[in-house]
Length: 221
Image (cartoon, rainbow, N blue to C red; front, side, top):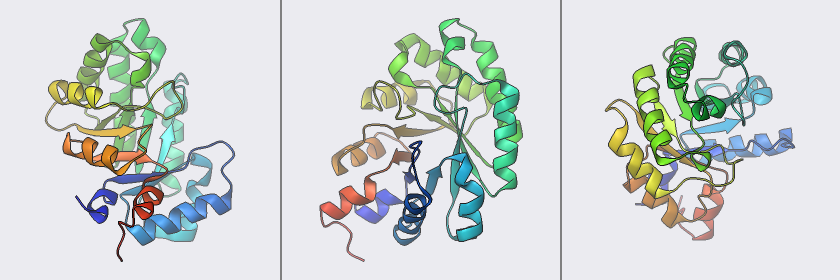
């Protein structure tokens, strides 16, 4: 798998709280140059990125990030505002407390309502695997499937651990046929990227894919 093929699956990401406009702009220019799937940026930068770059790239942002315990109404308003500012992909965080309380119907309902708010745009559901048991992960595969979300995603990158191949293979067994997979957090080598893609991931969330691939002299444009 060559670098161009890999980068088509990468959400080129910068979500740190101290990210400056210069850093976000650099991220966007890299995404345009190397044709990544999207840029994943804080909601506060969506409008400026769309004004600067328009339809040259796909803008993704995060909802209820990174802890997931904001209210459904707050998450819904975040989505509506981001859509009005030019965003077309959304990575939402579920309420982990609801998981621990086994309120899976509530989780399904929240995801379904947020998918309604997103409409024909893409909704990715972050379940933050590092905090979950295997049974909870399986239950959440069912929630994401029943709610009609587009993707299940492993991690925020702000938890205690990131994506693992074991979790992706578990997802693959339990998600419905219309749900895609995104691995994020701790993806640090080309081998990691290839392994996740070969395991069935459609997207990878990482801030370092371009740097990694350039370091291996893999980009021959």
